[in-house]
Length: 488
Image (cartoon, rainbow, N blue to C red):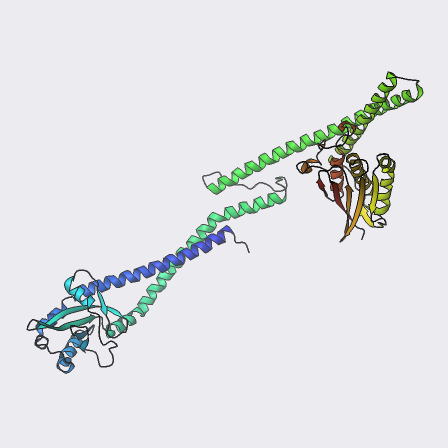
């Protein structure tokens, strides 16, 4: 399914919106967590040092659980957000305020502790959480000496498990839920506003696209598809619509002018051909009469032959021009009927049999018994075959052959006129159906024919709802193929 511009923009803005919101929420939470950790660690950074200095047991190097139990209990009551651990110089946990079994580590990494002692200004610093196998928390730390000998470290976790539990409960409280709901509503309204804005921007484009598609279906005729009205302001889409309206008006105006000029040309050709045929017919008749009745000899006879030949050639040219102009005028009527294709082919061959015999060219039909019934205009089909045979005879040398091949297809028949003539070069094949075009390898004098036969053939086949194809190679002959509808 093809998505419209609005749908693509909506999907894109949805994906971008969700990505931006996710990144913003993650960044906000991370920033809030880091800021809170930095503030709490900075607030309690000296806690461990004060405890180590003020407590005589720690100063004496006592670190067993029984001796420090009351101290840790008192400290936990005063500060339930803290957990206390005594760590030896190797990082091993010697004693702690938690109950036995709650601690998951036997030792911790001392590098964060040493870092905080040396540079207490670079906060926050996270150390190992003994209650978690891989957890990290902010802390306060102080070295414990006895007679200037390092006994270990007082390691105070800021944010005990009790503190974490209370924070988790607060995060799930109704107040936070309400705030989250209001934030979601705000984001949803913002999202809907963006979608409406995109729809407002893309709706004129959608309207313009549908209009262009409709005008294309009606061949850009603005009489059938009236122009859209656009406002005159600086909106780019409306300016584009007005530009397309002006372009369509120009196209229609030029098409009307071209149609009128073409119609005038066709009428001129038809009238000119009609006006010339009458005096030419009269001239030809008188020349024939003079040739038959007058006793002429020598140069006079030769002059009469030349005049009569040129007159006949001019008459054939005007007849073809008249026929082509009549076909292009769009006034030609087509009369479809059912008839035997084989009978028509043999009738056309009979018409050219004498001429082929004189030129020593063999005429053949494949299959010989082509008893096929077709549905077409017999007169126009006869004209097509005559033109193709005449063209083949003109380009086939003595000793050659011309074959009409009928090939049955599903619901139709392919008619091919094949010759063993001189052929047509590949660069000239696209132009042979144009009026007055004659291939450079035409056999004999080019003045003996008008060069309109193939153009007339192509127009006739268009009226019969068929196309003509040609296959040819120089020195190997040519093949003209067209289809005829079979009778149902």
